[in-house]
Length: 79
Image (cartoon, rainbow, N blue to C red; front, side, top):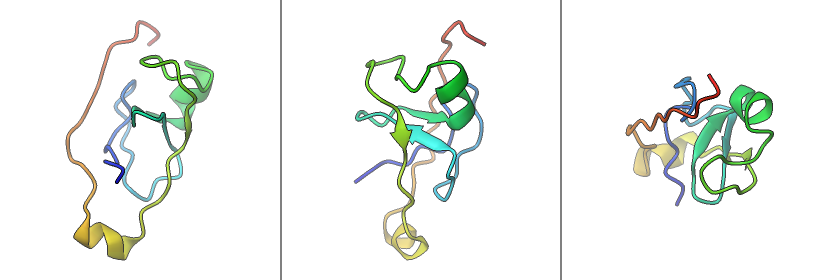
């Protein structure tokens, strides 16, 4: 099950579970669409995998399987 991190790892933008702006790699590194496109060219800076749109978890499923509240923010030297 995906963790659904709450923010962009680069700019710390809020990315709630229903966000269509969230992109992830196969390791679930999470970025907003702006950082993914403009800074990383859709390549994860951590694992070099492809960044793709994160799926939306249905609201009824979020009740039983809530999104993570743990924030991850890293300095990539691009900001």
